Amino acid sequence: MNLFNYSRRKSSEVEIGDKPLGKENPIRIQSMTNTSTQDVDQSVSQVKRIVDAGADYVRLTTQGLKEVESLKKISAELKAMGYSTPLVADVHFNPKVADVAATIVEKVRINPGNYVDPARTFKSLSYTDQEYETELDRIRKRLTDFINICKENRTAIRIGVNHGSLSDRIMSHYGDTPAGMVESCMEFLRICKAENFDNVVISIKASNTVVMVQTVRLLVRELERENMSFPLHLGVTEAGEGEDGRIKSALGIGTLLADGYGDTIRVSLSEAPEREIAVAQKLVDHILTRQNHSLIKAEVATEFNYFEPSRRKTHEVKNIGGHLVPVVISDRLDGSFVTDKNFIPDYLFVGDKLPKVRESSAYILDALHWQGDKNSYPAFTTSQIKLLIETEVDLKFLFISLPELTEDIISMLKKQPEVVLIGNSSHQNRLGEQRALAHKLTEQGITNPLIWHETYKEDDLENIQIKSAADLGPLILDGFCDGIFLQNQGVLTHAQIDSTAFSVLQAGRVRTSKTEFISCPGCGRTLFNLESTIAKVKAATKHLKGLKIGIMGCIVNGPGEMADSDYGYVGAARGKVSLYKKKECIEKNIPEEHAVERLIQLIKDNGDYVEDTEE
Image (cartoon, rainbow, N blue to C red; front, side, top):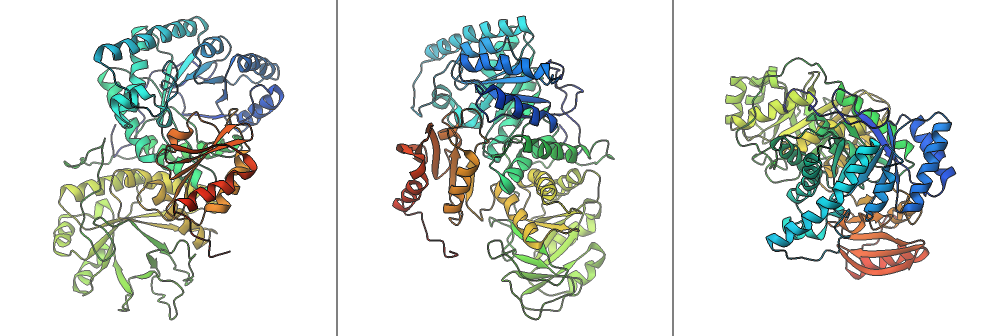
């Protein structure tokens, strides 16, 4: 892996029907149905829509043997219609179901957290070394039987670890940590390797983008140590829908794709599954524009830890840098100074159009034509260093790229602590050059804050959400971000760009500006209408800034994935909902029609509710 020069990780090839995965094959796109697998007609129709949208694989939930029988019918009907796209059975809690499913579909996903280990109960367990080894023997014997069935039927296995469904055994031994997630996966991979079974794909997911990225990086390191090259399936679980779902997915998946990881991806949206495909394809296409770029010569900063990044050390300049949250700069070159009261940028970039009357509480960033207004600050380019030095003000901005970071500029920065850098790039691999800039500043001991300037030409909001999240994600998660400045040439409004910027920072978990909703994409296990439920919960709670609310269709990942949520709304049975405070179930089996009202009451009872003043 090279931080500065893009290339894909070399992985082994896995046979999945007529769509092999890994090695030199394209990055595959996939989704999952949200119909009941027992409803053959509805499932067939939805699979067709997903495939027609461009999916390479389609996964279906497979709770029991009835669903396996339905899978057989679904597969037969699809093949009769000319659809040969590989199907994947998603199995939890029941190894016998996985055994039978492996004789029918092209791939079976099993979850190490509940394949042999029982479903998690958040209980702390204690094992002696011998007892722990006995548990591993149990897994080894059961998994070996399954592997033999897969060998006979040329069926691939996905070992799919989810942060939300680690077993109590792993949790008790390793804690709720990336290391525990990696070990949960490696236990199963070592058995596969011992049995000479290589037709394996790995996924290791979380709803927290920081945990998700860190865990995959640690996993790849462990795979290399143990001489394994299995292909990787990437995804952010419970990403949500709309803007949040797209940005959160693009930031997490995009960061790992940028590192060269990932042979197949799924963008999990709480929407119709066929809508996931275009988002995933846009993300992959954007990353692949970096292929075959000119070489970027750079070195990793000595103090940088790729596996556990910490924020780059900077000094504070007014409200920028240090331990302060990253700022948002927004373009107002058209002379419009109105801002959305929910997403007010910290600075407005206005060029020489200083407003006489301002309708925003943001500071003014006045490029090139600074007029000395007490609430405005000058911005310079590297061709104006003399003017920058001579201008006496407590905050200055300097637009800079890697080629412009000369010895003279480095010397100047060490003497000008009031300068905030705005890093940009016109390189084909813009991210690689920006990373190189950040590492060079770090290695040189420069502690001036660093804001990232990203420019686009987009008329489609989804495009800029995906691209900006993918471009900024690695810089945010690696700790090199004191602010972002999104600039777009197109028809999108200032409010749309500002909302995107704040949402990118929130997805990177460095600045919270709104309620965070952690919602699953839905599947055949979902026990209520997910989209309408999310809409109801959002309508009632979206003004509660700073709260995290989980909305889960069932208990497979529910309590675990929303463990860091403040409140949870989880499907308990058909038409029934359970409410959680953190990991604790507070009320069980509430009729769905009363569940949102009871959720609000629970939030009020805990003192976290405020009235919506906009109503």
